[in-house]
Amino acid sequence: MDFIASIVIPFIKSVIIVVGLLVGFAYTTWFERKVCARFQIRYGPNRAGPFGLLQPVADAVKAIFKEEIIPSTADKVLYVIAPGLSIATALLAFAVVPVGRSIHLLGREIPLYIADVNVGVLYLMAVAGLATYGVVLGGWSSNNKYSLMGALRTAAQMISYELPMGLALISVLLLVGNLSLVRIVEYQSALPLIVLQPVAFIIYLICCFAEAGRTPFDLPETENELVAGYATEYGGIKFPLFFMAEYIHMITASAIVTTLFLGGWQGPFADLHPLIPPFWFFAKTVFMIFVFVWVRSSLPRVRYDKLMKFCWKFLAPLALVNLAVTAVVVAMLA
Amino acid sequence: MEMVITEAVKGLHQLLKAMGVTLRYFFVKPITVQYPEERVRLYPRFRGRHELQRREDGLELCVGCGLCAAYCPAGCIYVEAGENTEEERYSEGERYAKVYEINLSRCIFCGYCEEACPTGAIKLRHEFALADYQRDDLVYTKERLLTPATPHVIVLEEGVIARNEVTKQSPPLFTIKGRRLLRFARNDK
Image 1 (cartoon, one colour):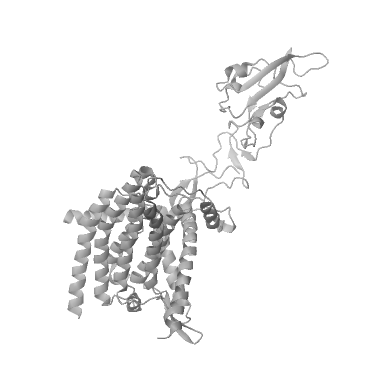
Image 2 (cartoon, each protein chain N blue to C red):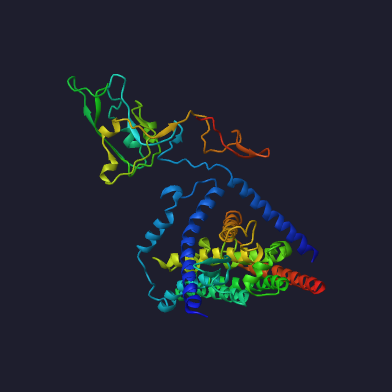
């Protein structure tokens, strides 16, 4: 294994993904505000630049120049680490997502993913589990009752959605027979898994909403009861950092749903040009983000005991039944 | 068990229905009035900034009686009367308003001054963009109150329905598959 292939190229790809996700975050906020506005027959931001395209820039500049206050009773180390932890885990998940087929550049074959981990799905689950720490630590270290309540809800939410999410994934894995996301996408060349596993798709999607902390499961930051939940004590640029983590989670969740259920970069004419698969991937991901926004502007928030009841008493059994049926079918066909 | 399934199906159906409603509105033209570029639609009864009226021959209608100041619940009007003379005649009667000031940072735009006025001299008109840089500038003097403003609005006829108002009588703004979605009148142009 030579130096360039093992160090330089993954490094460049990582930089591209990180920068892409950060810019993606900025324009996801713009996209959400625009789409949300249209659902409410408004225009949304349209003053800064054409179609309000410079709005994220204006917001970022404003956030950077805001005064930063660290509460005197806060646990300073954890308080500062928490937003970074949130973002880092949100970015990490993207490492195993294949964006397209390999491309040939400067006489080398470059695969369009950072790492083809053979336990890719496990890695995703692990990183998704870690993401909760940022929020929980942020809420705890602020030393504020609202923040603590927000953190508590995040914890309660996580132990509710992780189980059905994992069970839904297992039924997918039973069909594919491989944990690598690259293999999972290749498996879907003929038929996306949403057709074979509609129930698992719905369960996974619902859990994604909970994982990304989005409406109807945005309990950790319910602004009408908990001020801003875990982010109450955060100001200056640290508040947008949590915000950023939430949106990058949303992008990552959309990308993972695309990869696992919607066929990833597969699509019509994917063989014609090496840039068509990334286009399909992008289009599907944007569509999923649209679904996130659509749900946000349609559904009210659920109470957090109801979310737990729903996850444990309905989604988990449903996922188990789905898993059993899938297992029987796979065993009979084998 | 059976109950759980029927409830789940019912719930899913209702969720999809709700999402359908929002999606229908996604394709509707926004009703926002893009204010500085587009003009706001107001009714004649809209109570904006006060304007002192003149008679057709140029004489002021205000006779400096001070009833508006007495009636004002916010106490933001100050009137000081002066005597008209043959050489210097401002209004028809004996007296006129030598000083007439309204502190707009106190005014609640209730329109009681307009009601109290025996000569119809003070009127609340349609100017509403009143922001200023100095508080003192919000105390409007007689000269400023006598100058009619040219507000950036469309004044509707009373009874005509504004574009951003929804009533049962107004015709639907758009229909999809024969369903009336929102009723907005477009008859105010």
